[in-house]
Image (cartoon, rainbow, N blue to C red; front, side):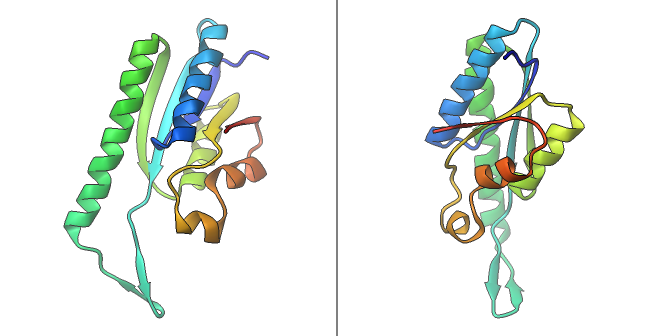
Amino acid sequence: MLFSNILLAYDGSKASNRALDKAVQLAQAAPGSVIKVVHAFDFPRVFIGEGLAPIPASVNKDYYDLAEQTVEEAKRRLDDAGVNYSAELIQGAPAETILKLAQEHGSDVIVIGSRGLGGIREFVLGSVSHNVVQHARIPVLVIK
């Protein structure tokens, strides 16, 4: 099965690096295909009781800088692979952002790593890849 409009969810984890490799293989198999890379990140939040504690601006800046570095790494690897791509950094809930972007761009397939950098939040809320698989209306290729 050949895909021409591939959405790659990338967060810099080992699994997402393997997903990037698979997206490159898919793109190379279908001349003229394009990979749309998305790195969705959300700033940390700390709840105390029912209130939301403010996070220092320096912490948010560190998160944003790391997100930019993650996108730049994906771009470098895709440049080296010689495939057509575009990359986007979006703030928001990762699963929702990935699904929305797939729909907006008319993606044929979503390629995502099985485990990202979610930590304890992933344990409590469910993994991003699980949410994407459950709600996607197009094929999802989950890479271990």
